[in-house]
Length: 308
Image (cartoon, rainbow, N blue to C red):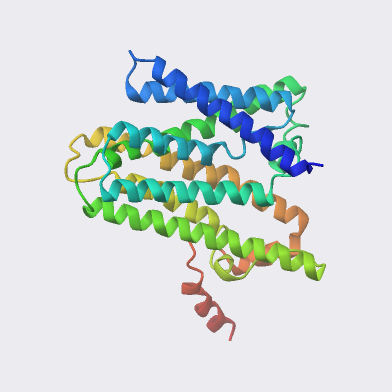
């Protein structure tokens, strides 16, 4: 008999497969629109398909992998549109899809269990957003549409990256290095956290992570995430770009993602930790005062010296 988790993954596969296919068909039907508008509208329809399934299954967690899958899908659109298959283009395309695949795989291997199971951040909103119709109306804008818009604009720099005729220019090279750094930092952070969870389960103790990169910043995984998005922006800058006002507008994506993480995701995570383990997490906040910048090593020695 098929497990609950396998059933959930198959349902997600059908939902996202339908959304991606529908978006592709609509994209090719909107001939009179500009490329960017076609891409936005067509994928917004895909977002609606995911939203309706969230209502049907009564869980917004169906939307959890949307932003990583969406980013991968955009990379294919931009690559096909550019018809530019030089080394730097293919390298960025591969990096985006490595980032997308790893995060999507990590989500399904650790956080996805049942089709009706919902992330605690969403389930905690249910008592506040009553009745259920209010929850799903507000949830559309806050849980689905806002990340959809930010991901869309966050991926727009791929348009410039893939169309650039420069091979490893200064902006491109720097941006690619930032992207790689972001992917590695996020992957290492997630691995260290996952390893701590496994060890805590084996040792039958409370799980708490304050080692490795987590000893340098309280949210190093988010730091890697932010680096990835700003890396895309930096990589889109080359000597052939003269429309700097338009290029500056592409900062909307990475800046918006940074603000969402810093003022929404991180406070929610810290509030939860303070509720579950108040004394331990307060000490951790004191020992590691930096939220996202992993630079605690620069100041930890001076703290020790002061105590001595």
